[in-house]
Image (cartoon, rainbow, N blue to C red; front, side, top):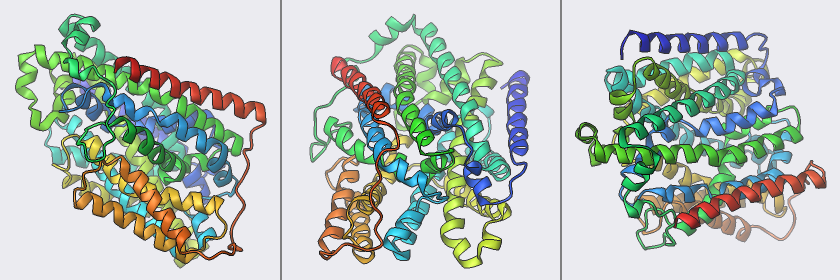
Length: 518
C-alpha cells in the first residue's frame, strides 16, 4: 500500500475509535453497556444483524467457494434458503418472549426455566463455541489484511485483536450497532468496486459468466448429504439450515443481545424482519464477486501464480492487492477491517455479557458485577484469549467459512431444542433437560471426530432431535411448575400477515433462483 492508502485507513480507524469513545458517555450499569440502555432503534439493530454476517469471513470465503472450491460454485445460494423460514419462526414466537423478559444474557431464560445447572451449562457451551468461532473470524480477517498491509499473519492478527478490544471496551453495544451500520455501507461499496474491477479485467459481466465452469453454474445439488459425499446438498441446507438459523438468530447471545436492546417487542420483531429481508441481496453480491474472481483467476496468469488450490482463501486478498488502484485499496481495506472489527467486537461484547451475568455477577454480587468497569475488564480478557486462538487457527479447513459453520453446527441444534422445550413443553424439568443437552452435544461431537458420513449441516437436526428425545423421554408426566407459558405474537394479525408474506416471498425468490440456475 502507498501513502494515500495508509491515510485513508488511518482516518477510518481514528474516526471509529473516536465514535466509540463518544458513545461510551453516560454508561452507568451493565444494561447501558451490554444492551444500550434498551434504547437501540430497530432499523439499526436490523442492519446490525446483517452486518455481523457480512464479516471478513464472508468477504474471503464465499467468493473463494464460488470461484475455486472443489464442489463449490453457485450451490452456496442453497445456504440462504432457510433464512426466511427461520426468521418467520422467530418473529412470531421466540423473539417476543425473550425481549419482554428484560434479559441481558439470553441464558437467564433457561436458568429460570430449568434451573441453575442447565442455564450455566448452556452459557458455558456458548462461551466455548462462540469463543472458537470468533478466533477463526480474527484469523480470516487477517488473511485479507496481511498481504495488503505487507505484514506477517501474526502481526495482522494482533492488529485486529488490539483495535477490536479497544473499540469494544470503550463503547459497548451502542458502539457495536453504530459501527455495524457504517461498516455494512462500506462493505457493500467495497464488494461492488471489486466486482467492477474484476469485470474490467475479463471483458464484462457476460464474459465472467461464460468463463465460469458449467458445473459451477449449477445452484442446486439434490443430494441429501447422508452418506453421498455431497459438498452442498440441497436437503441438508434447507432442513439443517432452518435449525441452524433459528438457533443462531434466536438463541445465540451475539445476535439476540441486539434484540434485547430494542425499546419493546414490536421493535425487536421489526429488526428481525429487516435482517431477514436484507440477507439475500448481500449474499448475491458475494456470489457475483466469486463469479468475477473465478474468471479473473482463469484469465490472469499473475493471479494464478499468487493463489494456489491449497490456499483458495487467499484469492480475494491477492486480487485486491494486485489489481485495485491506490486510494481505493485503502478504502476497501478499511471496509474489510470494519467488517472484521464489527464481527469481533459484537462477539466480544456478547461473551463478556454472558460471562458477567451468568458467572461473575452471581458470585461477586450486583454492586460489583453491575458496574460497566467489570464488563470492560472481562471484555479485555476475552480479547486476549480470542487473539491467542486466532494465532493457532491456521489450517482448520480449506475454506474458513466452512470451519466456522461446523463449530456452530455442533452446538446449535441442542441449544435450540432447550429453548423450544422451555417455551413449549411444561412437563420437562431441569435434570432431564440437562441430560438431553449433554447427549445432543456429545452426539454431534462424536459425528465430527469420528467423521460420520453425514454432511455437517445435518448436525443441527441431529443435535436437536437427540436433545429433545432424551429430555422428553426422561421427564415425568406432571408439568413443571416453574414453566412459563409460550407467548403469543405481539404484532396485530394484519402486521403478522404482512411480515409472513414478505418472508415467504424472500424464500420463494431464493428457491426460484436456485431452481432456475439448477
